[in-house]
Image 1 (cartoon, rainbow, N blue to C red):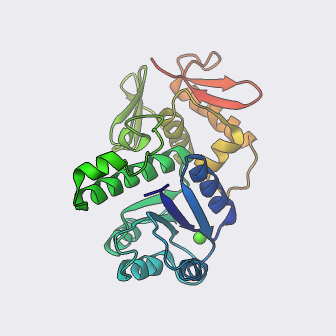
Image 2: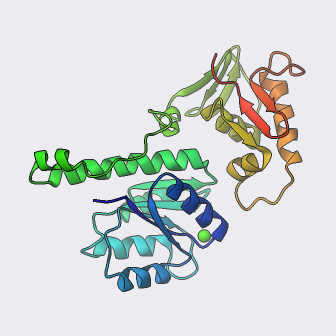
Amino acid sequence: MGRPQIIIVEDEESIAELLEFNLQNEGYACNSFTSGEDMFRFLEEKDHPSINLFILDLMLPDMDGLDICEHLRASSQYQNSLIMMLTARGTEQDKVRGLETGADDYMTKPFGIREFLARVRALLRRYVRMSQQSAEEAAEISDSAPYTLPTPNNASGPEDDLRKQLRAGDVVLDDAKHVVNKAGQELEMTHREYELLKFLMLHRGIAYSRDDLLNYVWGYDYSGETRTVDVHIRQLRRKIEDDSSHPELIQTVRGFGYRFKEDD
Ligand code: CA
């Protein structure tokens, strides 16, 4: 097996390009299409190449992501490929429906690219395990080493952190309960403040530009100004910092953006 082959079907070109760029950067072979029809035509023309992972947007102009998913699952060539569905902030209903149709994972937009890459890695690891289990000669496989996946930056991956509480000093974000406490006191947070804080705490020590934060936290379609980020950061600092005029948790990266303090 060569490099993992990934296909993206996403009609919003800016998202498709961003995902494709980052996947290729991680060493995956990746093709993106803006419609299911285009993708199926490609598979036909290429004589049904082996694809490890399909990343399908739910809302598409012609056939939607679930239709594509059903077609793939009904085909002999792709019934065992991995499928990840993407959708705008969705309902549980969508999620259940997507998984019943046979998707292996599901991500709600907007999402951070690091979280996305971590999920892709986790899925492909599962794929390697599955193919190893079904292989006849275990020894042969360990000799030929199917392929080396890119080394994760973070062994546990951000998605594992989501199940836990995120802590920084006396600030605790409990994502299961959707609350933030400081010194045991629950803080009042707007939706964006919460999402922004969660994003920063999930990616501690990493500097993000204001544009990145707009994309990851507000969403790719959001056409606001980067000043919006500054305003929210200021509000967050008032709530979580001991002294908001000398912030220690949310640090300013001069001429660039912001970074959450690396470790306690
Ligand atoms: Ca779409």
